Length: 418
Image (tube, rainbow, N blue to C red; front, side):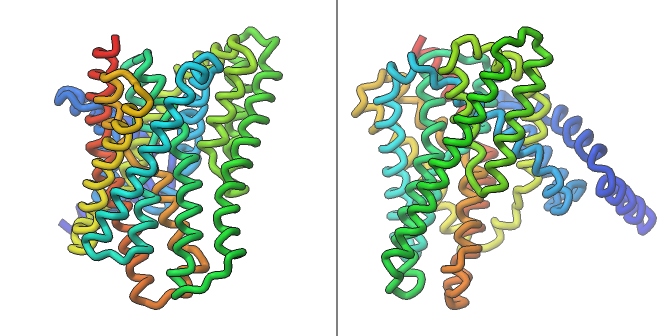
C-alpha cells in the first residue's frame, strides 16, 4: 500500500512540474465526462466542471493551488473571448430595438435580487451591513456558462438578444451597486463615523473602474478594426484579433480594471464601426471549444465541497442561494412585464441568470482584503470569512446546477419565441 501511495505522489509531482501534461489531462478527462453527462441530457459544461472538481485539490489533487494560479492566463483569455462575443451582439440595430427594454430588465433584476438576498439574510439574523454586502454581490451573473450553451446550441433569435444584453449590462450594474453599498456600509463596519469623502471615494473608484474599462475596450476595438480592415486572409485576421484581445485583457488586469467590461466594449465598438467586422467573430469562433472546455474544468478545480461542513455557512448559504434565485427570476419577470416583453421571454429568461462565478468571488475577496475590514474586531472578521465561504458555496451550487437550468430555458424560450 505504501508503494502505491509513493507512486501516486510521484505522479502528482510529475503533473506539478509539467503544466502541459496537466492541461492535456484536464482536457481529455473533461471531454469524456462531458460526453457522459450529455447522455443524461445535461449540458457538457456540467461534465467539464465535474471533471475539474474530481481532478482538483479537494479530490485527487492533480491540480494544486499553485498550479491553479499558473493557469490563470487560460481563465483571463476565456473571459476575454466570451466578453468580446457578447459585445459583438450590441450592433446599432439591436440597441435601437432592444436598448430600452434591456436596461429596464437589467436594472429591475439587479435591485430585486439585492433586496431579496439582503432581506432574507437579515431575517435569518445576519447583521444588516453584511446582509447588504452579500445582497450586492448576489446581483452578479456569470456570462461564461450562458455564452457557451448558446454557442453549443447555435441558438439565435430575440430571446438570445435579450439574454446577451442583460448579461452584458449585469456586470457593470453589479460593480456600481456594490460600490454604493460598500461605501454606505463602511461606516457601520468601522462602528460608525466614516468620513463622507472616504465613503464617496469608494463609490467613485467603482465608477472609475467601469469608465476606464470601457475606454480601454473602445480603443482595443478601434485598433482591431483599423488593423484588419484591408486584410482578407483569415489567419492574419486571427493573429491580430487575438493579439489585441490579449493586450486589452492584460492592461485591464494590470490596472485592476474589469477585463469583462473592456472586451465587451471592444466587441461593441468593433461591430458598430463596420458590419463587415462580423467576419472577425466568425474567424475566432472555431478556436473557442478547447479554450472554453479548459476554462470550465479549471473553474471546477477551484470548487471546494468542504464548505458544506460549516453549519452557519450552510444555513446562510442556502438562504443566499434560494433568495438569489427568487430575486433573479422574479426581477427579470417583473422587468419583462414593465417593458412589455413577449410572454416566452418573460417566462424563461430569468432561469438563465442563475450561474455565478468570477465577479462574485472577486467582490467578496475585495471586501476581505479591504483596509476597512483589517480594522474590525475578530468576531466581525470571522463573519467576513463566512461571507467568502457563502459565496463559494453559491458558486459551487450554481455552477453545477445553473447550466442545465439555463440550457432548458434557452431551448424552451427560443422554441416558443419562434
